[in-house]
Image (spheres, rainbow over the protein chains, first blue to last red):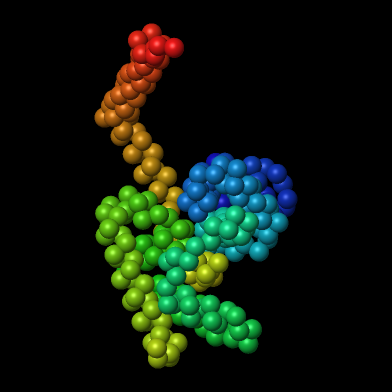
Length: 190
Length: 76
């Protein structure tokens, strides 16, 4: 199996061997992440993974090994591609639900609607990154699994050797904690 | 669409935070779990139970059809 650096080099040169190696190395991981977000709809998952390869093919020159590994780069692309697809599906099928929305997200939504608040949004992103970076490793894993990779509580419980109830209650506590820290960091009194 | 606002917040997350997660290990765990299920004979047991259920259900359906046809005819 080719090393990541070699794969990146080949793809930047637009050599198909690089894409083939990328597929061999990351297909399973990308499919797993896309399935976690999109569910077991094979067609959607396959299209999502293919779109991910296309994006990687077109933008590989922007990739920087100092910022992250190729595995993470590909995971980020597939995650965002899957979420865009999920949005599209929900829009066409009208399945969007108002669940799991917390106060923290409402703050973010308010800022999002205001074009002039772009700087504040950047600030809130910085705050969120800092909050997550300062969490205990296990708490961070829990939050990232749930809100970054959209894994189900059952899936998280299996991988983290916890009960489903423990996962849910821990996540609820973490959301409250994040909200408090966010308010302190952004200097908002609510 | 509000559901996605919470998800959007994580879109620009620092890649270094994701680097340490090693989500690829999930695949190994799933593989191990499947191997364990096979090794402990759970898959075999489940297959046998499913096969027996299928046969019993089939037999029951046939029995009910036959009974309906020959035993429970109402006089015209």
